[in-house]
Image 1 (cartoon, rainbow, N blue to C red):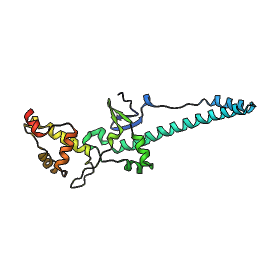
Image 2 (tube, rainbow, N blue to C red):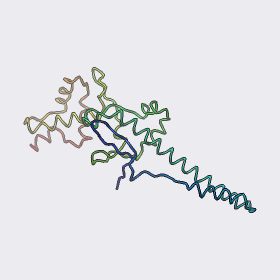
Image 3 (cartoon, rainbow, N blue to C red):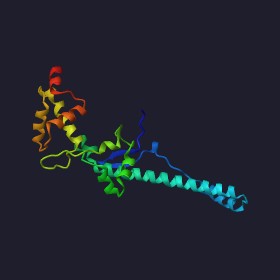
Image 4 (cartoon, one colour):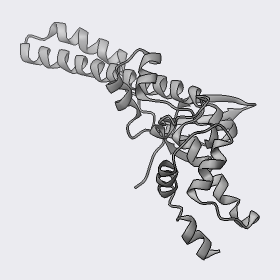
Length: 214
């Protein structure tokens, strides 16, 4: 499936710029000169059905233009709010993805959660030659002892992957329980069952299988 980005993010001198992606940015333009000519012509017509038809065409054009403009404004507002909240991702990577929900964004943009959900659905962000689903930046919260703000499920998964990636260099295979202990030293309290679930979602085999492969 070909994915077309809706939002473009650029990093200019450590400043994040967020805009609608031009190649997928649709607008409706109405030729006001032509509309005015039709309005003048309409006044001279005796055929009521034709006059009504012209009036409806003008009205439908305006409605389509307003709806599309409103859609673009909503997408951009929601995307800017989400990406500004997660801007550390663009500087430091997945490890600093923060916990975020549709409800959090709805409060910030003063919209219903359902509106935010529709604005995010099937929308993509282009950044640094990568295309990322906008919904990726919504992450559930993981409990930790000090209630550290950046303990999202994505950031924890990143930490797990980083730990496992060091195994070959250190010539040590870390069990899920050992990863629990290592994260505890960073004041992140997480169960072994959750570590297993996150590891499996990353498609990383168990420590037993990894030890056999090494």
